[in-house]
Length: 153
Image (cartoon, rainbow, N blue to C red; front, side, top):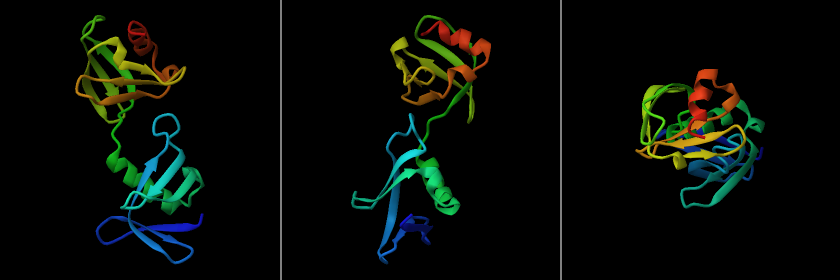
């Protein structure tokens, strides 16, 4: 790593290069936030220039990784569905009661086209309000959840 990170008095990320340059207000941006969240991360300056590139988030020292993850968490909101509890109807629109990594909620599926397959095991589901929910791995869902979801796929 050819830089260090810290927070300034205002809570902004500050990047220091080995050459002694300093960039305040750095914004971390994932290249592939859903498909490969730990791979490919740009550190962008306030004027939109890429200051540094990180191939693997896990390659960073613990302190730098923690600062970046905190910053990303404050801006990213993609709840992960852990369990489908019930669906109001197998025809759309349909209200789904789900348990996510952020608690229980109800989402409304407008149409089956709002379920997007990202890979063989990963789905992205958009509700009527534009919130996107992630199912990271279909095989990790319980049998009942998979059975309900199969009716829409």
